[in-house]
Amino acid sequence: MKQCFKCKQHLELLEFYKHSMMSDGHLNKCKSCTKQDSENRRKQKEKNIDWALSERKRHREKSRKYRDEGRVLIKNNSYNKKWICENPEKRKAHMIVNHALRSGTINRHPCCVCGNKAQAHHEDYSKPLEIIWFCSRHHADRHIEINEERLKQTFN
Image 1 (cartoon, rainbow, N blue to C red):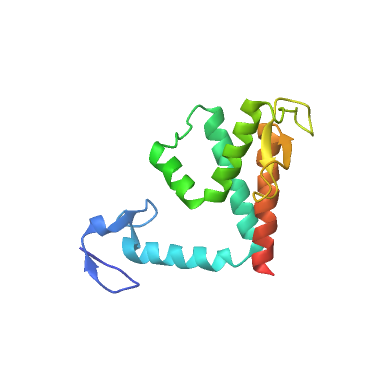
Image 2: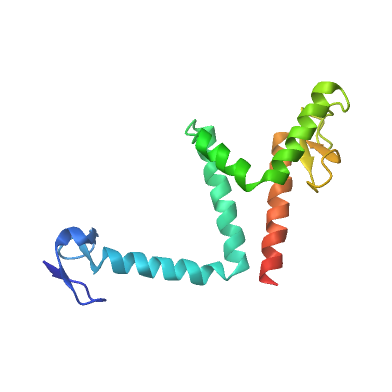
C-alpha cells in the first residue's frame, strides 16, 4: 500500500507507475492523478501555436520513420467507411475525377513541382475538375501547408 501525495488515497502499488529513482521503485503520484495532470498539461500546451505546429511535425517524422522501417499501420475498411461518411463532398470530387480519367475527359499529368507521377489535388472540392497535379510527397506537403494555415487561423 502507498499513499498518493496528490489525492491522498491509500492504494495498491499496482496503481502507481514504476519509477527507478524512487526509494520503493514507484512514482509518488497514482496513475489516475498522473493521467489527469498529463491531460491538463497537454490542454494548456495546445493553446500555444508553436507547440501545436512542432507536435504535428514530430508526429509526421515519427510516421515517416515507421514507414521507412516497414512498421506501417494499415487502415482497415471501417476507417475508410467512416471517412467516406464524414467527407461526402471530398468523396464525390474524387469519384468525379476518377470517372473523368477513365472516360478520357481529362488526362493525368506529371507533378507540377518535380515532374514525377502525380495524384490529383483539389484546392476547392466544390470544383471537382479544377485539379493541381502533385506527386505523393508534394501532395502531402501541400496538405500540411493547408492544415497549418487553418491551425494558425484558429489561433488568431
